[in-house]
Image 1 (cartoon, rainbow, N blue to C red):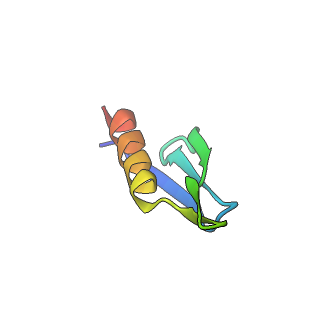
Image 2 (image 1 turned 60 degrees about the horizontal axis):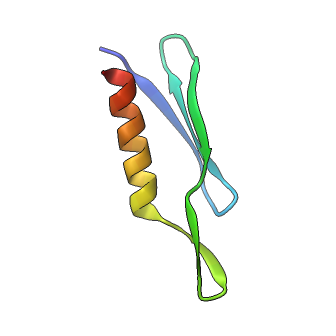
Length: 61
């Protein structure tokens, strides 16, 4: 069974990294998904969740 490592740098300027735990190969890295709201920015939790889930499933398959 393939396993992955998900690294998360939280916050508005953070990002998400996904690695193959067997080879430590970087699979993907992206900026934290954010959206402007009322003059501020905020993280979009559903986009974050979907990205991590889809990336993990694509790697495992």
